Length: 444
Figure (cartoon, rainbow, N blue to C red):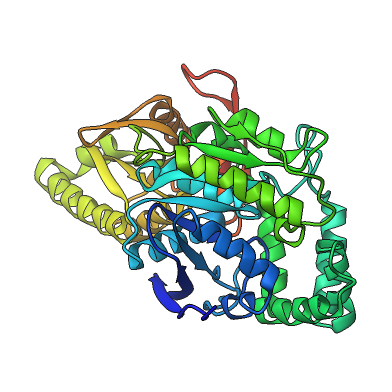
């Protein structure tokens, strides 16, 4: 078939390459895992079969994630929030109001965050062999250990792009067809076009830092999980933690690609078609995942007494103007202002933390110190208001912050991995009226 033209969507300053395949409804956003190169995709008949199979059920939007293929290649490690923004940019550029998300492996984190944050734009989610955490934990034993990651990163750093290394990788990823010389040749060049050595290292670091376990419960859109068969694994872990998730096991698969095996491909398409056919309209929900920021001025009562009413009002006006500039800069939504405090919501945790840091810096010339608390959680939204236990948690965290501190929950710390933000441990705390003890982290 004729190769679809390549389009570009702008996600901030980064250009994201994508193609539109097929037509009709619904839209299906197809996101690859580690690799991706739009042009060489069409040189592999087995992969083309997969794309066209998806297109039988709707209009497919297939993209190269930033750092891969034809998209721009920033060298920084990319967090799930950034990839979420890129998918939203592609949907906007393609005039897609809502879509089914289809992917697997390393795409799990982005799909989870997108579906929980934008239920009104997510008709449903299909996740093959999903990954929730990058590092092994007691309750998630399927991920690599830190030492195993170091070995893998060293291997990629020294060998990515070498033919012998990529042919060995073909044997690991697609043992069903790796004996075929034509497939191996395609695989080598597809991987080279997908990822430069530096980009490959960046992608693996992103996978290592992934952790979206805390937000699985906030996903309220229809979800189809296609795990590896035979025994409980990461797919079963995901399905057990998303309300109403449907789990359909595929035939045995030796590698990581469903599209190289005839039986697995047919089962994948059948499950996808049945799932898509049952979907209704938008998955809009009054409950969404949001990141909440509380700030207030340290020592405001004493400062007001020293300055007097008139001077304090003028200073407060300058404070409010500075805070609102930074909220607008990072796309925060002001929800309430009480005296010298602000309450705002963001659709991405990294933006909320960056906004808090920028507010802190912007107020320094006014000789004002603020404390800030940030938490990501499921909220009720109605009539422009945001309520729920997550609001109380964020407020309690802010109250524990010291002068000039930005204090965040462990959920926020996990979700902003790859954003370039760094934290020190803030210890475990009891939050008044909130069950359990909470690990908090202090922004550097």
